[in-house]
Length: 497
Image (cartoon, rainbow, N blue to C red; front, top):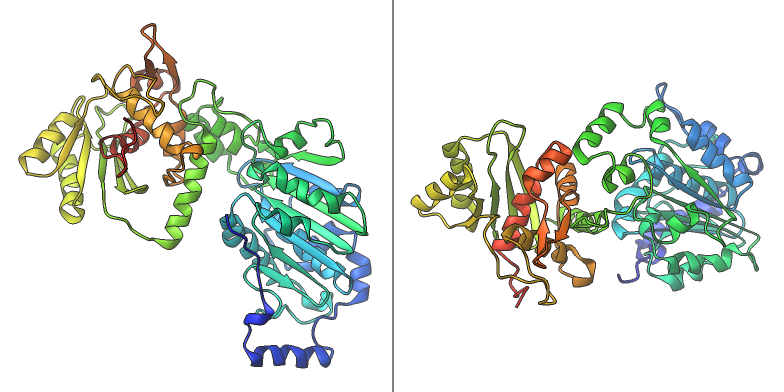
């Protein structure tokens, strides 16, 4: 990832610069009440409760207050918990508190995250949102100037700046020197140890009068610096850690109990995706799981970036997994444009003619071809598409396959095993295929569900849909549609010899 950091003054029109300088000379800009700064400098809880305009039905949660207050006794804080606990709001409050209570002296606040998009789409928009709710009469100065001070990815006041920087730009993070420093590590689970090490020089003292760090994230795999901190490994005892529980989030109204229960049914209580996102616990993907959750999350980030740009490649085709009966399975259509699954369509429809009509409509409009699961009623959909002269390929999971893995050494029991293992290899970060998948709960749960084993004949076998249904109470219809369209319509270069 290339270096990125917010810039400001040089890009402004001459008239905007002059207006700011006029205000500064008139004493109308940049000056914050010293009474305010003395009162709230070390009182983050009081700042959040008093300085923002809160609606009648809202307030910070008890655990948010605890996290804020911990900075009074601990310079380093690391917080993990479920999706939805209010992590980004905490980080935004910290930035605004630090900027307003330190301005007038030398200060800096570098903010980084596991992905640039986390900064541009979540953290810094959150800073702007809460800045709009500040009681400016309490601060003792006019609201931040959007042309000069509060920009898209930075907050530049008279004597310091908070800014966004990519997590792999170690020189920029290490080079942030000031009398007062605050490092924000957002979605810290995937930030590399080298990034934490780059900040450690400032945190350890030296010329810096005070230095703070806040690392906050949903947890992930049992590896990395964020995990090491929370597992209290030697050398990280000076970090204050906090696990916000699911029950705390439910009691605070941040997470719905119904949502949590539904995810338990959907993903399975012991699955890594449920433990990470709902329970807020570190959990590695099963050792015999086909696709690690961390790889899927990277594909979700790529999809989010694609969704922002909407740069469409040619339509490749649609994977069609047809529901066999009314037992809760779903018919799923996975629409693919080259490396991107752009859309998932699900229904409980099992009528052959109706499903055929849906697929035919897609092919008629977009071209490409359908890959259809022909076990069961899907065979009728495939036959009817061929009769109508559409391009279609049959996918029979039980067929034998001559494919091997990338090494050329691993063979597969059947086509289902070959297709799922290819999906694993496409998503492996080491292979740099950059497949993009939508952050869809059902798809994520499906992709992490199947187990694998090696048979007595030495071939790799993937758990069948029926076996998964017995174990989890559901089938992997959505993932199967995605897996099929990538297997029968591979990327342009040859994947396997």
